[in-house]
Amino acid sequence: MKAHHIFKTTIAAIFAVTLTSCGVTAKFEAPKVVSNTNNLTDVAPNRLIQDGAIRVGVVLPLNTKYGKIVKNALELAVIDNKGAKILMIVENSSAVGPRVAARNVIAKGAEIILGPITGSAVRVVGVEARAVGIPVIAFSQDRNVAGNGVYLQSFLREKEIEKVVAYAASRGFSKLAALTPKSGFGNVVSASFKSAANRHGTLVASGSYTRLKTAASKATFIADIKAFAAKAKAAGANAILLPEGPNVNKNILKVMQSAGYSGDGVKFLGTSLWNKPGTNSISKLSGGWFANANVNKLNRFNSRYAALFGSTPSTERAALAYDALSLVATLGRTGVAGSRFSSGAISRSGGFGGVLGHYSFGFGGVSSYSLSIMQTGSGGFNVVGSGGLAAN
Image 1 (cartoon, rainbow, N blue to C red):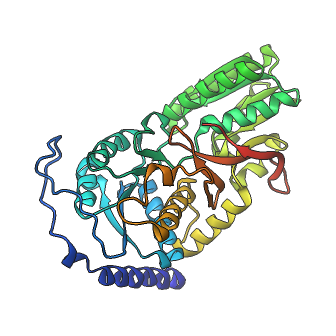
Image 2 (cartoon, rainbow, N blue to C red):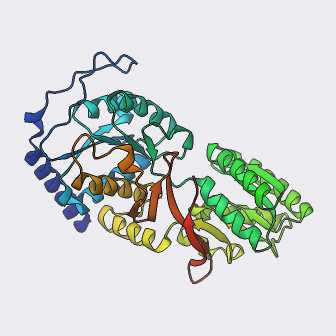
Image 3 (cartoon, rainbow, N blue to C red):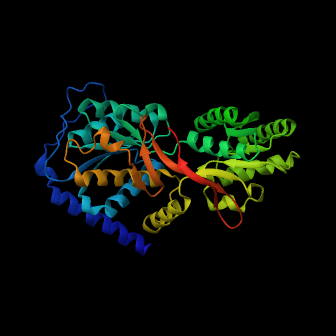
Protein backbone atom coordinates (compact mmCIF):
# COMPACT_ATOMS: atom_id res chain seq x y z
CA MET A 1 0.00 0.00 0.00
CA LYS A 2 2.88 2.38 0.81
CA ALA A 3 4.58 1.76 -2.55
CA HIS A 4 1.26 2.24 -4.38
CA HIS A 5 0.68 5.53 -2.55
CA ILE A 6 4.15 6.77 -3.49
CA PHE A 7 3.55 5.86 -7.13
CA LYS A 8 0.20 7.69 -7.23
CA THR A 9 1.90 10.76 -5.74
CA THR A 10 4.64 10.51 -8.39
CA ILE A 11 2.10 10.33 -11.21
CA ALA A 12 0.27 13.37 -9.86
CA ALA A 13 3.53 15.31 -9.68
CA ILE A 14 4.56 14.35 -13.23
CA PHE A 15 1.21 15.32 -14.70
CA ALA A 16 1.13 18.55 -12.72
CA VAL A 17 4.53 19.52 -14.19
CA THR A 18 3.37 18.62 -17.69
CA LEU A 19 0.20 20.67 -17.44
CA THR A 20 2.04 23.68 -16.01
CA SER A 21 4.86 23.61 -18.55
CA CYS A 22 2.40 23.40 -21.45
CA GLY A 23 0.48 26.44 -20.28
CA VAL A 24 -2.83 24.84 -21.13
CA THR A 25 -5.18 27.47 -19.78
CA ALA A 26 -3.31 30.27 -21.55
CA LYS A 27 -3.34 28.54 -24.93
CA PHE A 28 -6.99 27.90 -25.68
CA GLU A 29 -10.40 29.09 -24.69
CA ALA A 30 -12.67 26.82 -22.70
CA PRO A 31 -14.78 24.75 -25.12
CA LYS A 32 -18.44 25.51 -25.44
CA VAL A 33 -20.80 23.21 -23.59
CA VAL A 34 -22.46 21.00 -26.16
CA SER A 35 -25.33 18.59 -26.05
CA ASN A 36 -25.02 14.97 -27.16
CA THR A 37 -26.46 15.58 -30.63
CA ASN A 38 -25.32 15.24 -34.21
CA ASN A 39 -25.10 19.01 -34.67
CA LEU A 40 -21.50 20.06 -35.31
CA THR A 41 -22.12 23.79 -35.60
CA ASP A 42 -21.98 24.50 -31.86
CA VAL A 43 -18.57 22.91 -31.29
CA ALA A 44 -15.35 24.89 -31.03
CA PRO A 45 -12.99 23.94 -33.89
CA ASN A 46 -9.85 21.88 -33.33
CA ARG A 47 -6.76 24.02 -32.86
CA LEU A 48 -3.23 22.63 -33.12
CA ILE A 49 -1.36 24.60 -30.49
CA GLN A 50 2.25 25.23 -31.49
CA ASP A 51 4.05 24.98 -28.16
CA GLY A 52 5.90 21.70 -28.69
CA ALA A 53 3.56 19.54 -26.64
CA ILE A 54 2.03 16.43 -28.17
CA ARG A 55 -1.66 16.76 -27.35
CA VAL A 56 -3.26 13.33 -27.10
CA GLY A 57 -7.01 13.08 -26.68
CA VAL A 58 -8.11 10.11 -24.60
CA VAL A 59 -11.74 8.94 -24.75
CA LEU A 60 -12.46 6.09 -22.36
CA PRO A 61 -15.37 4.76 -20.29
CA LEU A 62 -13.67 5.42 -16.96
CA ASN A 63 -16.59 4.08 -14.94
CA THR A 64 -15.75 0.59 -16.25
CA LYS A 65 -13.01 -1.85 -15.30
CA TYR A 66 -11.46 -1.92 -18.76
CA GLY A 67 -11.55 1.86 -19.09
CA LYS A 68 -9.60 2.28 -15.86
CA ILE A 69 -7.06 -0.38 -16.86
CA VAL A 70 -6.40 1.28 -20.21
CA LYS A 71 -6.00 4.70 -18.58
CA ASN A 72 -3.47 3.25 -16.12
CA ALA A 73 -1.47 1.77 -18.98
CA LEU A 74 -1.49 5.07 -20.86
CA GLU A 75 -0.21 6.87 -17.76
CA LEU A 76 2.58 4.32 -17.43
CA ALA A 77 3.57 4.88 -21.06
CA VAL A 78 3.60 8.66 -20.57
CA ILE A 79 6.05 8.23 -17.70
CA ASP A 80 8.26 5.93 -19.76
CA ASN A 81 8.19 8.39 -22.67
CA LYS A 82 8.53 11.58 -20.65
CA GLY A 83 11.09 12.99 -23.08
CA ALA A 84 8.36 13.31 -25.69
CA LYS A 85 6.46 16.01 -23.75
CA ILE A 86 3.07 14.34 -24.03
CA LEU A 87 -0.05 16.03 -22.70
CA MET A 88 -3.01 13.68 -22.30
CA ILE A 89 -6.45 15.29 -22.48
CA VAL A 90 -8.72 12.73 -20.84
CA GLU A 91 -12.51 12.60 -21.20
CA ASN A 92 -14.77 10.11 -19.44
CA SER A 93 -17.24 8.80 -22.03
CA SER A 94 -19.13 7.02 -19.24
CA ALA A 95 -20.22 10.44 -18.01
CA VAL A 96 -20.78 12.47 -21.18
CA GLY A 97 -20.98 9.86 -23.98
CA PRO A 98 -18.38 9.22 -26.68
CA ARG A 99 -19.58 11.98 -29.01
CA VAL A 100 -19.30 14.81 -26.47
CA ALA A 101 -16.06 13.32 -25.10
CA ALA A 102 -14.55 13.36 -28.60
CA ARG A 103 -15.71 16.92 -29.24
CA ASN A 104 -14.22 18.06 -25.94
CA VAL A 105 -10.73 16.68 -26.61
CA ILE A 106 -10.85 18.02 -30.18
CA ALA A 107 -11.78 21.49 -28.91
CA LYS A 108 -8.76 21.38 -26.61
CA GLY A 109 -6.37 20.82 -29.49
CA ALA A 110 -5.94 17.03 -29.64
CA GLU A 111 -3.82 15.93 -32.61
CA ILE A 112 -4.80 12.29 -32.23
CA ILE A 113 -7.37 10.40 -30.17
CA LEU A 114 -6.68 7.17 -28.26
CA GLY A 115 -9.73 5.06 -27.45
CA PRO A 116 -12.49 4.23 -26.99
CA ILE A 117 -13.02 0.48 -26.48
CA THR A 118 -16.37 -0.69 -27.89
CA GLY A 119 -17.15 -0.78 -31.59
CA SER A 120 -20.22 1.41 -31.30
CA ALA A 121 -18.29 4.10 -29.42
CA VAL A 122 -15.41 3.94 -31.93
CA ARG A 123 -17.85 4.63 -34.79
CA VAL A 124 -19.10 7.78 -33.06
CA VAL A 125 -15.63 9.06 -32.18
CA GLY A 126 -14.40 8.31 -35.70
CA VAL A 127 -17.08 10.55 -37.21
CA GLU A 128 -16.07 13.46 -34.96
CA ALA A 129 -12.34 12.97 -35.61
CA ARG A 130 -12.75 12.77 -39.39
CA ALA A 131 -14.65 16.07 -39.37
CA VAL A 132 -11.44 17.82 -38.26
CA GLY A 133 -8.93 15.51 -39.94
CA ILE A 134 -7.30 13.81 -36.99
CA PRO A 135 -6.75 10.04 -36.56
CA VAL A 136 -8.09 7.67 -33.93
CA ILE A 137 -6.30 4.65 -32.47
CA ALA A 138 -8.95 2.60 -30.67
CA PHE A 139 -8.94 -0.64 -28.66
CA SER A 140 -12.00 -2.40 -30.05
CA GLN A 141 -12.16 -6.02 -31.23
CA ASP A 142 -14.59 -5.07 -34.00
CA ARG A 143 -12.54 -4.85 -37.19
CA ASN A 144 -15.57 -3.43 -39.03
CA VAL A 145 -14.95 -0.01 -37.45
CA ALA A 146 -11.36 0.23 -38.72
CA GLY A 147 -10.34 2.33 -41.72
CA ASN A 148 -10.83 5.88 -42.97
CA GLY A 149 -8.66 7.38 -40.26
CA VAL A 150 -9.57 4.88 -37.53
CA TYR A 151 -6.92 2.35 -36.49
CA LEU A 152 -7.37 -0.56 -34.12
CA GLN A 153 -4.56 -1.31 -31.71
CA SER A 154 -6.03 -4.68 -31.12
CA PHE A 155 -5.37 -8.38 -30.86
CA LEU A 156 -8.13 -9.81 -33.01
CA ARG A 157 -9.37 -13.27 -32.12
CA GLU A 158 -9.72 -14.09 -35.82
CA LYS A 159 -5.94 -13.92 -36.21
CA GLU A 160 -5.25 -16.06 -33.16
CA ILE A 161 -7.72 -18.70 -34.26
CA GLU A 162 -6.44 -18.81 -37.84
CA LYS A 163 -2.90 -19.30 -36.55
CA VAL A 164 -3.66 -22.06 -34.03
CA VAL A 165 -6.05 -23.96 -36.32
CA ALA A 166 -3.53 -23.94 -39.18
CA TYR A 167 -0.82 -25.17 -36.83
CA ALA A 168 -2.98 -27.95 -35.36
CA ALA A 169 -4.08 -29.18 -38.77
CA SER A 170 -0.49 -29.26 -40.00
CA ARG A 171 0.28 -31.62 -37.08
CA GLY A 172 -2.53 -34.01 -37.96
CA PHE A 173 -5.25 -32.56 -35.73
CA SER A 174 -7.66 -31.75 -38.53
CA LYS A 175 -10.97 -33.11 -37.20
CA LEU A 176 -11.91 -29.88 -35.53
CA ALA A 177 -14.61 -28.93 -33.03
CA ALA A 178 -15.39 -25.75 -31.11
CA LEU A 179 -17.31 -24.98 -27.93
CA THR A 180 -18.03 -21.27 -27.52
CA PRO A 181 -20.06 -19.09 -25.14
CA LYS A 182 -23.44 -17.64 -26.11
CA SER A 183 -22.22 -14.06 -26.41
CA GLY A 184 -20.88 -11.54 -28.90
CA PHE A 185 -17.38 -12.82 -28.20
CA GLY A 186 -18.56 -16.38 -28.76
CA ASN A 187 -20.17 -15.45 -32.08
CA VAL A 188 -16.93 -13.92 -33.36
CA VAL A 189 -14.89 -16.92 -32.25
CA SER A 190 -17.36 -19.45 -33.65
CA ALA A 191 -17.47 -17.79 -37.08
CA SER A 192 -13.69 -17.44 -37.21
CA PHE A 193 -13.15 -21.06 -36.18
CA LYS A 194 -15.61 -22.37 -38.76
CA SER A 195 -13.87 -20.42 -41.51
CA ALA A 196 -10.39 -21.56 -40.43
CA ALA A 197 -11.50 -25.18 -39.95
CA ASN A 198 -12.95 -25.31 -43.46
CA ARG A 199 -9.68 -23.99 -44.90
CA HIS A 200 -7.31 -26.25 -43.00
CA GLY A 201 -9.30 -29.33 -42.02
CA THR A 202 -12.87 -30.39 -41.28
CA LEU A 203 -15.33 -28.91 -38.81
CA VAL A 204 -16.90 -32.02 -37.28
CA ALA A 205 -18.79 -30.56 -34.31
CA SER A 206 -19.74 -27.26 -32.73
CA GLY A 207 -21.66 -26.16 -29.69
CA SER A 208 -22.37 -23.17 -27.49
CA TYR A 209 -23.08 -22.75 -23.81
CA THR A 210 -24.89 -20.39 -21.50
CA ARG A 211 -22.30 -18.75 -19.31
CA LEU A 212 -22.29 -19.88 -15.69
CA LYS A 213 -23.21 -16.67 -13.90
CA THR A 214 -25.96 -17.61 -11.46
CA ALA A 215 -27.33 -20.70 -9.76
CA ALA A 216 -30.24 -20.61 -12.21
CA SER A 217 -27.88 -20.85 -15.20
CA LYS A 218 -26.02 -23.88 -13.83
CA ALA A 219 -28.43 -26.50 -15.17
CA THR A 220 -28.43 -24.93 -18.64
CA PHE A 221 -24.64 -24.68 -18.63
CA ILE A 222 -24.31 -28.37 -17.76
CA ALA A 223 -26.86 -29.44 -20.38
CA ASP A 224 -25.11 -27.38 -23.08
CA ILE A 225 -21.71 -28.91 -22.29
CA LYS A 226 -23.02 -32.46 -22.20
CA ALA A 227 -24.76 -32.02 -25.56
CA PHE A 228 -21.52 -30.82 -27.12
CA ALA A 229 -19.49 -33.64 -25.56
CA ALA A 230 -21.83 -36.20 -27.12
CA LYS A 231 -21.49 -34.58 -30.56
CA ALA A 232 -17.69 -34.29 -30.35
CA LYS A 233 -17.35 -37.92 -29.24
CA ALA A 234 -19.62 -39.24 -31.99
CA ALA A 235 -17.77 -37.22 -34.64
CA GLY A 236 -14.34 -38.37 -33.49
CA ALA A 237 -13.01 -34.84 -33.01
CA ASN A 238 -9.29 -34.81 -32.31
CA ALA A 239 -8.95 -31.05 -31.70
CA ILE A 240 -11.34 -28.94 -29.62
CA LEU A 241 -11.31 -25.18 -29.19
CA LEU A 242 -12.09 -23.81 -25.72
CA PRO A 243 -11.61 -20.05 -26.18
CA GLU A 244 -12.13 -18.70 -22.65
CA GLY A 245 -9.84 -18.51 -19.63
CA PRO A 246 -8.86 -21.17 -17.09
CA ASN A 247 -11.74 -20.71 -14.65
CA VAL A 248 -14.35 -21.35 -17.33
CA ASN A 249 -12.37 -24.15 -18.95
CA LYS A 250 -11.96 -25.97 -15.66
CA ASN A 251 -15.74 -26.11 -15.23
CA ILE A 252 -16.28 -27.19 -18.82
CA LEU A 253 -13.83 -30.07 -18.55
CA LYS A 254 -15.39 -31.23 -15.29
CA VAL A 255 -18.81 -31.47 -16.94
CA MET A 256 -17.40 -33.21 -20.00
CA GLN A 257 -15.71 -35.83 -17.83
CA SER A 258 -18.88 -36.35 -15.80
CA ALA A 259 -20.66 -37.03 -19.10
CA GLY A 260 -18.19 -39.82 -19.90
CA TYR A 261 -16.05 -37.83 -22.32
CA SER A 262 -12.42 -38.37 -21.31
CA GLY A 263 -10.82 -36.31 -24.04
CA ASP A 264 -8.02 -38.85 -24.45
CA GLY A 265 -6.09 -38.23 -27.65
CA VAL A 266 -7.71 -34.83 -28.11
CA LYS A 267 -5.61 -31.71 -28.59
CA PHE A 268 -7.22 -28.75 -26.86
CA LEU A 269 -6.83 -25.36 -28.51
CA GLY A 270 -7.35 -21.90 -27.06
CA THR A 271 -6.93 -18.15 -27.47
CA SER A 272 -4.67 -15.66 -25.73
CA LEU A 273 -7.15 -15.78 -22.82
CA TRP A 274 -5.27 -18.97 -21.88
CA ASN A 275 -2.25 -16.86 -20.99
CA LYS A 276 -2.91 -17.07 -17.26
CA PRO A 277 -1.20 -19.18 -14.57
CA GLY A 278 -4.37 -21.18 -13.93
CA THR A 279 -4.21 -22.75 -17.39
CA ASN A 280 -1.10 -24.75 -16.57
CA SER A 281 -2.76 -26.25 -13.50
CA ILE A 282 -5.47 -27.94 -15.61
CA SER A 283 -4.09 -31.38 -16.44
CA LYS A 284 -6.43 -31.97 -19.40
CA LEU A 285 -5.07 -28.84 -21.10
CA SER A 286 -1.45 -29.94 -20.72
CA GLY A 287 0.12 -29.93 -24.17
CA GLY A 288 -2.64 -27.72 -25.56
CA TRP A 289 -1.88 -24.90 -27.98
CA PHE A 290 -2.86 -21.26 -28.34
CA ALA A 291 -1.56 -18.35 -30.40
CA ASN A 292 -0.25 -15.26 -28.71
CA ALA A 293 2.22 -12.44 -29.11
CA ASN A 294 5.49 -12.44 -27.18
CA VAL A 295 4.30 -13.99 -23.91
CA ASN A 296 7.55 -13.31 -22.05
CA LYS A 297 7.42 -9.61 -22.89
CA LEU A 298 3.73 -9.43 -22.02
CA ASN A 299 4.29 -11.10 -18.66
CA ARG A 300 7.10 -8.68 -17.83
CA PHE A 301 4.81 -5.77 -18.68
CA ASN A 302 2.00 -7.24 -16.57
CA SER A 303 4.37 -7.65 -13.61
CA ARG A 304 5.48 -4.04 -13.84
CA TYR A 305 1.90 -2.82 -14.17
CA ALA A 306 0.95 -4.85 -11.09
CA ALA A 307 3.85 -3.46 -9.09
CA LEU A 308 2.72 0.10 -9.85
CA PHE A 309 -1.06 -0.22 -9.77
CA GLY A 310 -1.55 -3.05 -7.29
CA SER A 311 -2.95 -5.80 -9.54
CA THR A 312 -2.26 -7.58 -12.82
CA PRO A 313 -4.36 -6.21 -15.71
CA SER A 314 -7.14 -8.62 -16.62
CA THR A 315 -6.99 -7.75 -20.31
CA GLU A 316 -4.27 -7.49 -22.96
CA ARG A 317 -5.74 -4.07 -23.78
CA ALA A 318 -3.38 -2.68 -21.12
CA ALA A 319 -0.33 -3.69 -23.16
CA LEU A 320 -2.02 -2.57 -26.38
CA ALA A 321 -2.73 0.84 -24.87
CA TYR A 322 0.88 1.14 -23.75
CA ASP A 323 2.00 0.34 -27.30
CA ALA A 324 -0.40 2.93 -28.76
CA LEU A 325 0.90 5.72 -26.54
CA SER A 326 4.49 4.67 -27.30
CA LEU A 327 3.69 4.91 -31.02
CA VAL A 328 2.42 8.44 -30.45
CA ALA A 329 5.64 9.30 -28.61
CA THR A 330 7.79 7.81 -31.38
CA LEU A 331 6.09 9.77 -34.15
CA GLY A 332 5.67 12.88 -32.03
CA ARG A 333 9.35 13.29 -31.20
CA THR A 334 10.37 13.92 -34.80
CA GLY A 335 7.21 15.11 -36.55
CA VAL A 336 5.54 18.48 -36.81
CA ALA A 337 2.15 19.23 -35.29
CA GLY A 338 -0.50 18.80 -37.93
CA SER A 339 1.32 16.15 -39.97
CA ARG A 340 3.20 13.84 -37.60
CA PHE A 341 0.21 11.47 -37.28
CA SER A 342 -0.59 11.17 -40.97
CA SER A 343 -1.83 7.86 -42.40
CA GLY A 344 1.59 7.34 -43.98
CA ALA A 345 3.34 7.77 -40.64
CA ILE A 346 1.03 5.46 -38.71
CA SER A 347 1.03 2.81 -41.46
CA ARG A 348 4.77 3.02 -42.16
CA SER A 349 6.20 -0.16 -43.64
CA GLY A 350 8.74 -0.71 -40.87
CA GLY A 351 6.08 -0.82 -38.19
CA PHE A 352 6.82 -0.35 -34.51
CA GLY A 353 8.25 -2.23 -31.57
CA GLY A 354 5.93 -2.89 -28.64
CA VAL A 355 5.62 -4.80 -25.39
CA LEU A 356 3.64 -7.41 -27.32
CA GLY A 357 6.35 -7.63 -29.97
CA HIS A 358 6.79 -6.05 -33.38
CA TYR A 359 3.67 -4.88 -35.19
CA SER A 360 2.46 -2.74 -38.05
CA PHE A 361 -0.83 -1.36 -39.35
CA GLY A 362 -1.93 -2.88 -42.63
CA PHE A 363 -4.20 -1.45 -45.31
CA GLY A 364 -7.30 -2.24 -43.25
CA GLY A 365 -6.10 -0.19 -40.27
CA VAL A 366 -5.79 -3.14 -37.86
CA SER A 367 -2.54 -3.81 -36.01
CA SER A 368 -0.75 -7.02 -37.01
CA TYR A 369 1.40 -8.49 -34.26
CA SER A 370 3.84 -11.34 -34.70
CA LEU A 371 2.11 -14.42 -33.28
CA SER A 372 3.69 -17.59 -31.91
CA ILE A 373 2.15 -20.92 -30.96
CA MET A 374 2.41 -21.51 -27.23
CA GLN A 375 2.14 -24.93 -25.58
CA THR A 376 0.86 -25.39 -22.05
CA GLY A 377 2.49 -27.58 -19.43
CA SER A 378 3.37 -27.86 -15.77
CA GLY A 379 6.57 -25.91 -16.37
CA GLY A 380 4.77 -22.97 -17.96
CA PHE A 381 4.21 -21.89 -21.55
CA ASN A 382 6.71 -22.82 -24.26
CA VAL A 383 6.98 -21.57 -27.82
CA VAL A 384 6.52 -24.48 -30.26
CA GLY A 385 5.64 -22.58 -33.43
CA SER A 386 7.58 -19.64 -34.83
CA GLY A 387 6.04 -16.20 -34.87
CA GLY A 388 4.96 -14.41 -37.98
CA LEU A 389 2.91 -11.33 -38.74
CA ALA A 390 -0.75 -12.31 -38.79
CA ALA A 391 -2.40 -11.08 -41.95
CA ASN A 392 -5.13 -8.47 -41.83
